[in-house]
Amino acid sequence: MARILITGITGQDGSYLAESHLASGDEVDGLVRQSSLLQRTRLDSVPALVKARSTGRLKLHYADLSDTSSLVSVLRNVKPETVYHLAGQSHVKISFDLPEYTADSTGLGTLRLLESMRHVVPDARLFLAATSEIFGEAKESPQNEKTPMNPINPYAAAKVYALNLVRIYRKAYGVFACAGILFNHESPRRGENYVTRKIARGAARIARGREKELHLGALTPKRDWSYAVDIVDGIRRIASAPKPDDFVLASGLPHSVGEFCEAAFRVVGLDYGKHVVLDPEYVRLVDITETCGDASRARNELGWAPKTGFLELVRIMVDAELADLDAHGDPA
Image (tube, rainbow, N blue to C red):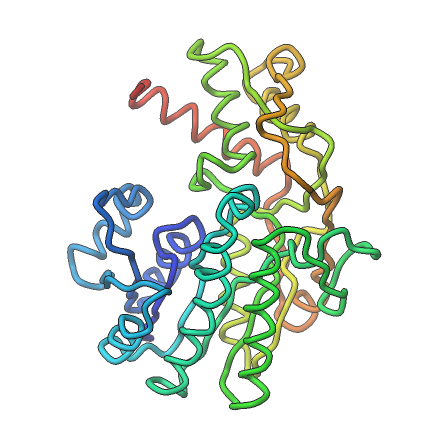
């Protein structure tokens, strides 16, 4: 039994990671921010997580990446063996609206956590969730661990800083600090302001007669999409490897936003072209044309490979939206 600490436990990856470690018999602790709204939808809707909280195997602690003292306090109390660092502002479009907050939470927040761990739990392992956004408009495809970083948005710039810190602390202090360069990964637990969840939700609502149109920014960008459950499996393999290192986790098969729309509406027997409206409000200031990851190192050294294909992922997401609508109706 291991003691695990997860920052960003209320997010998509954090909830799946907590669920996975609880299934392995581990004790899980998570960081949450103090807020006037105490809604933690993912933690409150997954039966395994609800049960673990009731039995004390899953504990939540108030802390903030902008407050070093709160991080030190939690680390001293929990004494984790592994820390998964998933927290921080991670929405690309929002990072242009809140660049300073993004830099502080995603970039400097990682520095505060590394420094706190170095002094309080120097033997603990740290995993950082990095992102394919660090490559920007890469000059090579697919992108791997050696591809030059070329961020084109504030979120990506903050993650470049965070990833470089992990590498610096690993070399300078000998700490077990590693990272996963995670390409896009989705699930029914994805936030509603992300395009894949928005498409899945829109297809379901249109199919059930709740809406008539789905407004999107652009259909041409291509992303390397995987299932979040598969990515979490890779995250655990990186964090438990004999030596700390950084690995790309990706499917290697990019698909366009338009292809995601087509697949989602096909699940409900509709033609997406009759319902999707291009809306300039949702167009990013700058955007990456295509991402495609090379996860051959993770496959060869960690034995990892995604198990869920693109069409199956889309079906999982749309089916979940349909089931939710049928079970709970329209809260609006």
